[in-house]
Every structure is written in structure tokens, then in C-alpha cells.
Image 1 (cartoon, helix red, strand yellow):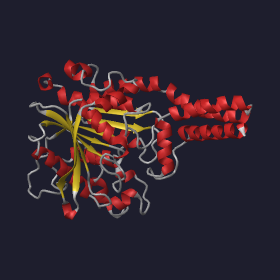
Image 2: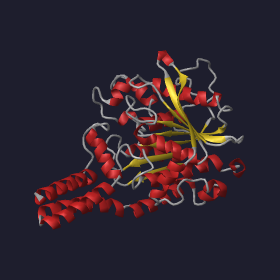
Image 3: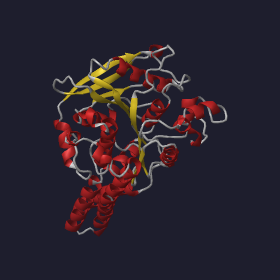
Image 4: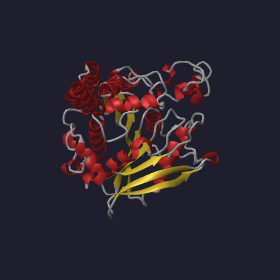
Length: 409
């Protein structure tokens, strides 16, 4: 019986190790196995702990099969740990490449002290810090009802009274434009993290399963709502950023920032010609975002075909209009792109192409390539690479918000 238990431990360790180290499964991102693979990749402690336990139990039961199965899990977990230092150096170089050698000196010292995380390689301190953060949260505030569909947002504010105006971050969830919701998959913790840095965070909904350009129109409507209610929540309208998660959120964040003033893509809740969004967004962060939807496989009923109402040959104008790369021009907000090198839902080539296009016209652009990262990363301030990503997101936003020291008060 002891050998059987040891063998089961070994099988579990090897299975988690295979999920962590193997290629991305050809399954939808929301499939339980895809979610399990993402967790195994971003939380290699599971594989490491299971592997070590299986090896110990294999030795005690004198089961070499269990021992070597456990070794597979342990090796898979340790390999991910060994990549951290190299990834940290690569991230630091990416920030310098995108923002210049002295970019950190442009962030005032008092802003540096607000960061939840002081070093990129910290693991537990970020989680402890975000759980201790004093945050005032308001859930399910109705901001629009296009076509009768109620859209709501959650508001995260720093606790305590202050008359000072604060920067704001508008967060958009992912889900291939047809699923997901605000605050899901632990993004509420990331919202608390951002609030602990002194920002007001608005986590917004948009219509799911609707046809282009409805979701983008909803995002622009949310931005207008934030601007209209800026005095109530002490938001500085000159310092607003968009943060888009996991594919669809990143795509909509890029488009909302890049198409301000485009009469073809107006807000869903206003019908006047004036566009007050033109200069509202000063920075955009996009995770795993598709930059050119024309590169998506031309397969009937796939996510993009449903979103745009047909295949590229049937909706050429929609595919071009819905692709952030077609809106690239000088003067766009500074952009931070995050993409996993093992993302098979949205290949990292999308972010590489957009980075080159933005830099060609002089837009400050950072591209963080996450080693062996998969689609859906950066949902929690937990794990091996997520806190490292958040470390640079924090500093990128601070650089965009506080380049002028006078605004740091």
C-alpha cells in the first residue's frame, strides 16, 4: 500500500510538471485544463513541492518509479525558478530600451516609497502588502445601459480623506470579448495593489458576446463616466491610464487609447459629436493583446469571426478598423506591452509587431517578454513572474503619471 501511495504522489508530481513544462494545450483559454496549466506555469511551487514529496515517499517505500516520477515534477518546478534572475535582467533591459537610461530618476522619491513592491524579485512581500492595504471599495456602480444592457463598474479608492487629486487606472478584463467579468480570477487583488500606490481604480464591464464595435464603445463610455465624475472621486483628469488584461482587455485598452477622437468609433452612451476622451489617457498597459486581427486564422466561428461578424474576406474594413496597429501614429500615449513567449491563443508576434510600429513613430514603448509565459498571466500579485511584471507596471505608470515632479504631491 505504501508503494501505491508513493506511486500516486509521483504520478501527480509528474503530471503537474508536464503541465508546467509542456507546450500550451490546444484548448480554449477558459478550459479547466488550460487554467490548470496556467497555474502550474505561474506557480511552480506546486510542482516543486509535489516533486520533492513524491521523491521522499518513493525513497521510504523503496519505489524507484515513484522517485523518478517525483524527480520530473521537481525538475520542472526548479527550472522555472532558475529562470527568474535571467527574466529580471531582461525586464530591466526592456524598461531601459523603451523609456531611456535615466527613466527611473524621473519618478519622484516620494512616489517610489508608495510602491507595494520595492524589489522585482520579491515574492511574499507583495502579497502581504496588498492584503494589508487600506482600500475603500464600491461595487456595481451603474455607468451606462446601452440597448438596455446594464453595465457596472467597481471603484477602489485609497482609504482616508485627502483633497489631493489622484491618478486613475481603468481596468478592462479579458475573455475573448465573450466572457469574463470585472474582478474575476483574482484581478480584484491587482486592483487593491494599484490602489495601494495611490491610484483610484475603476474596474469596468463591457457588453459580452456583442458585435464590434459595441465593447469598445462601452469602454469609451466608461472613460467618459470617469471624467464626468472625476471631482466626486478626486481623480486627476490629466492622469488616467488604461490597463487591459488577457487578450480582449488589452485589445480594447489599446484601441480606446489610440482611437480617441475617431468619429467612426464613438462612445455608446453619448451621441454628441464632441469627444472628451481625446487627451484623457496618458498611458496604456496591454497584456497578451492581439495587435492585428487580420493575422488571426480565418476559421468560421472562431472568436474574432464572431466578434467582427465574419471572416476577413467578408469584413475587411472591420478587421482593419479593429486592429490597434492600423491606428499607430505619432503622439499616442506611452505603451507597455506584456506577452508570454508560450502564448498560443494570441502569439507574442502581435506585441512585437506593435512595438516596432510604435517605436518607428516615436511613441515610448516597453515590451516585456515573459519567458515561457502563457495566455492569462498577470492576474494575481502571486507566483514567480506575476510580481515581477507588476513591479514594472507600477513603475511604468508612475513614470507616465509623475514625470513632472510638481504633480507628485
